[in-house]
Image (tube, rainbow, N blue to C red):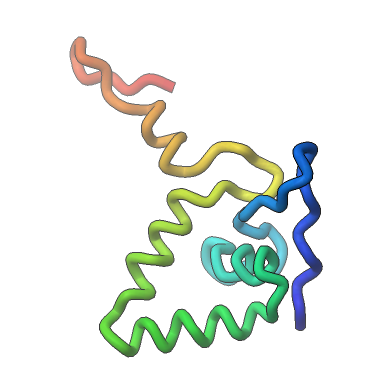
Length: 95
């Protein structure tokens, strides 16, 4: 099943987003498939092939999960974690 093409944002550019629908883990493969306008199965098979040929799929998937924002959001997981860093005084976490 081919994902519908990504809709352009206000600036007219398509944005890479992790999809909320059709996700199995973090929505990275579904988001990449939507952005490239290809079937999500092609991306998933490619990820499995990369995993079997040296394991590169795992760090790539984790990087995508951390750096690609969710559909409908402009913040990434990495950005959220950066804003919750411990403060210099006492090590308390800020929100």
